[in-house]
Length: 481
Image (tube, rainbow, N blue to C red):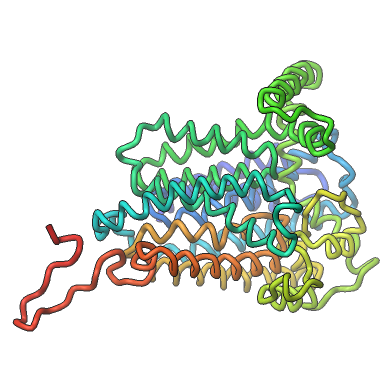
């Protein structure tokens, strides 16, 4: 444990809190939020040679959305949209910092004593490695095609949209699999080419379409190469490149989705170029707010919780577990058989607890902290957050111990648990996504013997050692000539 560095984070957070602490909140809450953020980054780098880095990366994103972003928006209020600051800012800020601290504490306690993983390919035969390599390439191609088609309801029926979305996300599993198999043999320039493809693809999707995969790639590449610098540089690169992307994305998507924009690839590239040129002029006139503001505002999930506090219980009574029960039931429903199932991003829940109507193409929920407060209030919400994060940490620890001899199996962990970091995803969304993704993994294991052997054998990826009738141990696949 990096106790001396942790003390350094605590010391560094104090002057930062003194300088940037919003006036409506006590100094200790700003210190706690900044200490949580710096500690999350520290553990992320310190454990970068372990696969356990992934949940710590989620803690960094969670802290960014609930501490750094609201502090920025407080000092630069011109970047705010209809979700303006209210007299609940102080209470909400304290609630969010305590919630973020609980998130990080649960991850550290759950993962601090787990063993180091083995080498990725130590137990994989050449046949299994080759099959997984082919599977990754084919899966990425099919998933990218579905990514282009998923908005076409005339091609993909609405009842299948959720599973299509899960199939689309398989492209990230495929890339992470290739990273773990090929990273030592592939030039870094190809990795950054992959980043550029991901950035272009994110123009048609949400910020999570960009940030989450890039951070996930960085975690796996940093682990595979045993270089913390790779993780740091990649993460910073993703953040910096996201700024101009987020600044022009709203105008670009509005033009394309309305049907008024160009339909050719060259035309859309020219459109993006014109928006970036306008952004350059805007930055010259308004300063860094024009570039940084849209990204930080998009990450500011604390403001959603603030409007939940403004609504509950003054307008809407505490739900007392109602949304959680409904979320558990929804997680086992299939939309084709249950057309009335609540959609992910629950607009009805969002409007109910914030009194804000979402536009037709927007999918957003009140987040884990928002749902905790809407159900149980301030102290009850923090208690529930502690319980849910303890379960999440325990779940990841169990997965880690189970797959500690099959590092390649960890490419599926972000696929199942990736929704947990998003401050706008409610617990019901996370459960629904996790259950459906496990179904997809089961289908993949059923159809691809190589994945079945990686996920279900011990040691994974090879046949278990066994004795021959003569009493001599027979060779495993990895040892066979």
